Image (cartoon, rainbow, N blue to C red):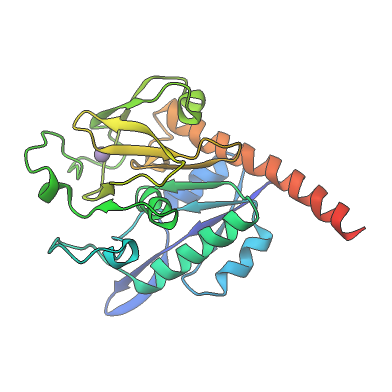
Length: 249
Ligand SMILES: [Mn+2]
């Protein structure tokens, strides 16, 4: 049985009506890595669907409301804040964490992980670091890599990608600011912007600021990230099933 990966969804307006959706590249990346994606709509009831999942993938999307990390809006250009999405994703992380399920965050997902575990975000990179030479909101196509990141040695990320530096794509105007306590910065751009964080424990708890789902066609490191995550979820499935069977005896 393949592991089921719960995939969080974007809530955006389309033709005047809200809709929940996910870009197909996330689904393709999960499938190619050997998992079965299950879309988690932005309703509180989605939390119960985690009972049928073996891992949680937090996808990219609009900004997290700064109130969620205790800050007032600094007058930045927000991209699609959704109160429903913020609330549901925080519930999903809480529940996944309660049962020690592996979690992988991408772009907004790494930011959501930071916020969920008590960290903060840079609300707008252009406002905080107006002189940065790196274009974190690239105009190039999604599958193009446009800036480098250094990868921290002896990190789970370094172990997975097998490299101390990576070329990544970049579609963000926000970034992790204060890393949650116990978490570690494991990738940074040359301007110091945090590009990945992870929890150093046994469990797969990691977020990256770039979009590996758009890079699996060309970048081995991107494929490895998904393959490792899905493999860890498969192990978690086996272990949690065993625990459940033993518990019900
Ligand atoms: Mn970037």
